[in-house]
Structures are given as structure tokens and as C-alpha cells.
Image (cartoon, rainbow, N blue to C red):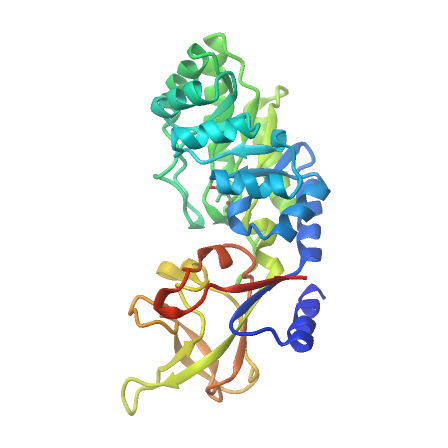
Length: 377
Ligand SMILES: *Cc1c(COP(=O)(O)O)cnc(C)c1O
């Protein structure tokens, strides 16, 4: 139904070039779905997934809070009408002068994962609240976010104590179980760590208040995924088993799960060819690739559903590649897509599930290809 609205837009408006169309009605439903699934948690939309002003304004009106990673994202959210107390500066890697600017803009909640970052915040945003990000292993996620962010739980104790010593409020713990996480028990493992940090800190006289459970909520690409409701139940059960009846304040930070299924990209076939006369594998070159919107096909991590005008015809194996002169610009060549043998140059394809991490992952003009155009309806 929602997809029909997008398809009508393509038919009626004939937008130029490869482009993304995002439907706000789907995002509204997703937001309300998260509220229903996790009624005790505050929702901080991960702005990096898709910062289109229309999306930010809709979420402001629905009462969302926002997880941001830079001063520019903070400014976009403020511009959309959110008060600064609805914004978290959730990047653990911040320049001190950016913290100064965020603080001046009124932001008072910051992520850290080491003592060095705590010291920056104590200098640049004195008296504010910090939460410490802990590592997770990312198992079960299509797009793990481990290693780069977070520290081990034992080190988190030192980080949180240090913050207290520097007169910051040691507010809580955060984790991210990895993006497109389909293993419901991933939150359980992370919440066990969080609860143990809460207990250790309490023994040291510091009461933590908040667990930030990050994003990771998946959308359906080629395979079914558990519903928001199922995640809600799994998280609630894990919370009860690790925190008993002393459930802390919780935050979730959905990005993909908020906007991913709200977008469709339309692309055009530039060339269909083979690498040898009798090769049965066709190479299908699109006017969109890794550098103008499909970055998440890196390592073929995210496999998008693709609709062609010839669906129903006999199919054969295809490599899918982008239009640039970089040989890394191949989306799928290990696990081949089976596409109609009747595909030809000029055909338009629709790529579903592309509302998150597409427009923002497009390069500015690599090889002269413009960034992905996007329309919000
Ligand atoms: C990217 C990110 C998110 C969103 O993750 P999804 O898997 O898209 O839901 C949430 N929190 C933080 C800190 C992030 O960096």
C-alpha cells in the first residue's frame, strides 16, 4: 500500500535520474510501531540513517528524540524544531571544539568510551551527562558496528568513575548490537553486561540511571525478520531477567528500522553484457552503484529486493555493477542475482528497502556522477 504511493509518485512525477523516494507515512507507522513495542523506552532516531528535513520535522512532531554524530547533525535537528534536551551527541569520537559548540547549542548528553573523551567533555561541556559505550561482538548482525566503538565492561567502570570525579553526571551505559541484527538474544547478552556495570557502580556509590540500547532493529530485505513486537518482548524479558524489578530508564536509537522500508530507489539499466561469448553470467550495469547510494552492498552485506519490468520471465544469473570507472563499484558478484533473461538496456528497476544509509552514503561527484537525488512524499 505504502509502496503504491511511491510507485504512483514515480509514474506521475517522472523524477530525473536514479533517485530515492521516501514515504513519510511509512516512517510514521514505524515510529508508532516502536512506541507500541517498547512503551517504556524513549526513541532517539539515529539521524545518520536519513537526515532529510521532512523526516526530521515529522519525527519532531511525533515526539521523537535524536541521536546525532556531529555539530551539523545537531543543527539539522534543531532546525527541524527539536529542543536541545531531545538531542544526544552519540558519537564517541568528537573534536573538543565540536563539543564546545554542541554545549553552546544546549546539548547536555554525550557518549564516551574512554577516559580521554571524558576529559574533553569535562573541559568543553562541564556538568553535563555522559554515558559509556561498551563493546558488543556484533554476532548476528548483517552490518556489525563492533570494535570501533565502545570499551570492555571492566574499563567502562573506570571511565564512569572518572567522569564522576570530573563533576560530570555518570548517567548510564550504551551499546549497539550491530545493524540489521536478526538475533533476538543479542540484546540479552549486552543487557547482562550493562546490568553488571550498574551493580559494580552501585557498590562504588554511583547510581547509574539509563541504558541506551542503540539501534540494530532490522527491516525485511530478501528474508523475513522478527517484528518490532518480537524485539520488544525479547528486550523486556532480558531487562527483567538482568535488572529484576529495578528497571532503569531506557533509550533506543533506531535508524534502519525507522526509515529503511520507507524508501524505494529507481534506477535504469545502462548496459547488459557478457565477459565471453558463451558466458552464461550477464553483467548488468545500473546508473546507481556503490558510490552514489548503494554503499551498503560492500561485502554484499545488504542484499536488496529488486523489481524489474520483466518479473515472471525466465531468469538467469547476473552480476550487478554501478556506472563508475572503479572496479570496486560492483554490488553483487559472489552471490549472483537471478534476473529475467529479457532484461535490456533502458529498463527501469526498483530497489526496495533503500530509505536508510543510501542518500547520505553517496559521494559528491565521483566520476561526475551526482549524489543520489531524493524526494520525500
Ligand atoms: C548508526 C547508529 C544507530 C542506528 O543503527 P541502526 O542499526 O540503523 O538502527 C544507533 N546508534 C548509534 C550510536 C549509531 O551509530
